[in-house]
Length: 251
Image 1 (cartoon, rainbow, N blue to C red):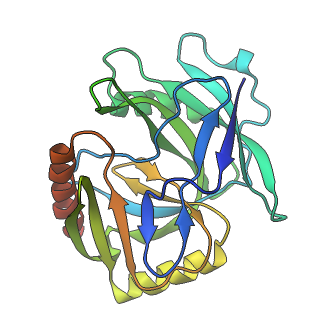
Image 2: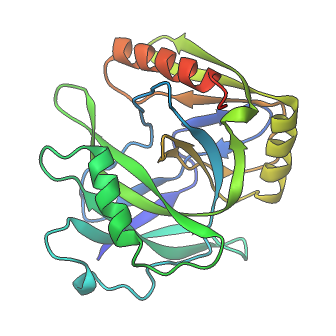
C-alpha cells in the first residue's frame, strides 16, 4: 500500500470571498508523480454543479487489503492524514484507479464506481471521484488517475444557487467568478460555519474538481473556480464555456 500525506497549506484552487479555505494536496511517498489539485471540466449545456460535504470520519477502506483489489484493474490503496474529530490529524485510506491507455476519465469513473459499489458505506454517505492530473513535457495537463472521496448529506449548494457566473483572467490564470443568490450565500455561510476544519467538495458534472479544507465561516456569497494548468488560451475558453453552462439554471 502506498503512503500519502495531506498538507493543510497548499495551492488554493477553490477560492472564497469572506473566509478561508485551502486545498489539501496528497504527497505520494512512493515517488509517483504528485497530482495537481487544479482541474478542468468539459462544460456543456447540461453541466451540473454542486458543493458537497466531505466525510473524512468514515474510513471506508479500513478493512480492504491491497491483495483483495481486482488484479489488472489499476486500483491502489493510499493513506492520507485528514482533520479528525479531536482537532488532530488522523490517517484514513482512499483508493486510486489508473486510467487505461486510451480510456477517458468518464469511462474510468464508470469502471471505478462499479467497484466502489461493492464497498459498504454508512447511511447518507456516497462515493465521489476526483481527477488526478499530471503535466506532460508539452506543458499540458492530462488525467492519469481518479481517487475516491466519501461525501455525506445533501448538497450544500446546487446550480440553482448561482446568481451569476463570469469567466475571468488574471495574467495566464483563468477562472470562473461565481456570485451566489442571497439564499445560497446564507446557506453556504451556515454550512461553512458548522463544517469548519473539515473539507467540502466542489463537484462539476459528477467529478470533484477540488476538496478544500474550510478554515472558518465563509460569508459574502462569492467564490471562484480556477481552471487547470497548461495552455492559457484553452483555459480561458474553458472558463467561458463553464461560466455559460453554470449560468443556466436547471429547469
